[in-house]
Amino acid sequence: MGYVISIVNMKGGVGKTTLTVNVATSLAKDHGLRVLIVDLDTQINATLSLMPPLQFAHLKKENRTLKQLINQVIQPNAQSIIPIENIIQRNICKVNGFDLLPGDIELYNDFLLAAILYAQTHQNQQDFDKNWNTLEDSLVRTVLQPVMKSYDLILLDFPPGDNLLTRSGLVASSFYLMPAKPEPLSVVGMGILEGHIKKLKQSDRTNINLLGIVFSSLGHATTMAAKVKNRVSSEFGEDKIFSTEIPTNVAVAKAVDEFQPVVLTEPNSSGAKAFTDLTKELLQRLPTRLSKTRSEG
Image 1: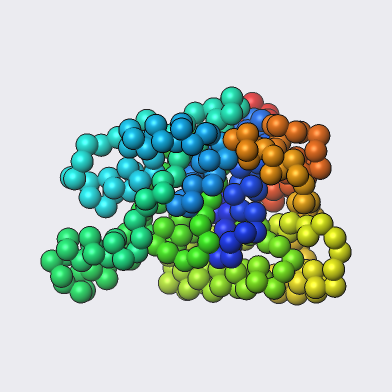
Image 2 (image 1 turned 180 degrees about the vertical axis):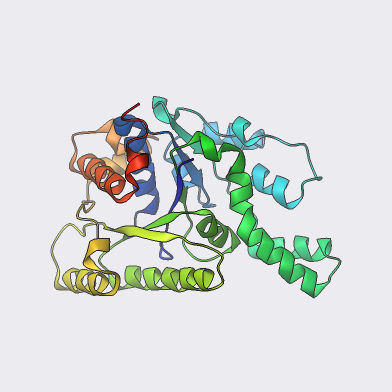
């Protein structure tokens, strides 16, 4: 069994999805690992980075998205069951071993989930609190459990902000990686995330560990950027900062319009080379037995 890794920052616009998509592709293409992306964001940016909107619309019409799997956990008797194996899209972008669990623009928000659970517990507050905590701890794990042994790495692409699905994803993960920009608000998002993870650990709900922090370049040197990086290094430790930075690169944006990762569309671009180097560095931070599973096979 491999590992589940959360790609997460409570601040939006820091490059979570682009990092997730390109690192996952490189893990499969360059290192022969079996990789699954799980799109937990209702903006479905990861999904639409890897397939055209019409293809997604077809999957949604057939209920072959993450929403169906969440429905089956929350209301197991409400509809017919579709196995996760029939929802996962295989060999995305024609890369062997690279799979996608498509997201959905209509995932439950916390208020709707609370209403459903409250009704199920017959408006008993004590039962509701217990069921809510159980759902947080088990939702993502339950969705992924049937395929956990099929992958070396499962990468979770998160929305910004805090909700039940975010917390459930963190609880289900062995590691987390924080994309960031060297800007004050990006660091605020990191601090909020660390606070949430600290609470989860204090209540013995997770043993998740930080793999590191990946900075995206602003495209030019600034005093502010240097101060932010120094602050993050002092708070988290210099060893937690990835040496590879992701540059500002037009090829990355162009690749999104082609519904493919830049490591496939323009592998010689500065952006693609950075993601390739980042992937190698990521593998060095993971247990040796994982990074050698397929390359030695």
